[in-house]
Image 1: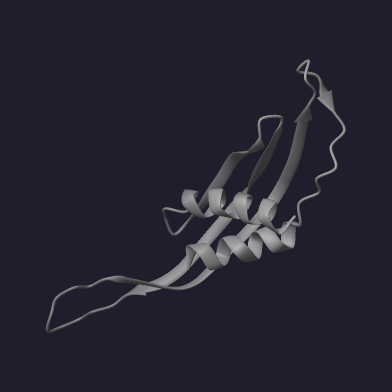
Image 2: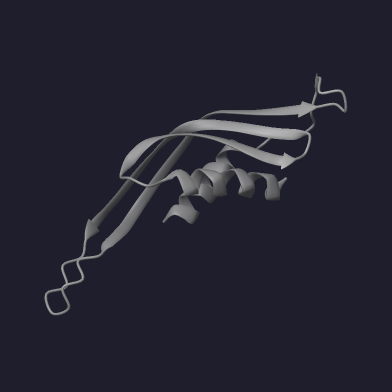
Length: 102
C-alpha cells in the first residue's frame, strides 16, 4: 500500500509548479486500476539574495498539500467497473507529496 501512496504523491508533487494552486491527477496503478486525486497546495519560501554571486535562487521553506478527493477505479476484463480492494491513505499521500515537493 505504501507504494500506491507514493505513486499518487509523486504525481501530485509533479503538478506543484507555483506558490499555490489546485491539482487533479490520474494515476494508473496497473492496466485495470486507476486513481483520481484532487485538492490544493501552498508553497512558502523566499528568494535568497546572494549579493556576491547574484544568484537570487528560490528557497522553499514549507509545502502544504491537501487531498480533497481520492477515488480508486478498478475494471474487469470486460471493461466493467468492479469493487476494488485498494484504499489509499490520504494522510500518507499528503505527507509524501509535501516531502517530495520541498
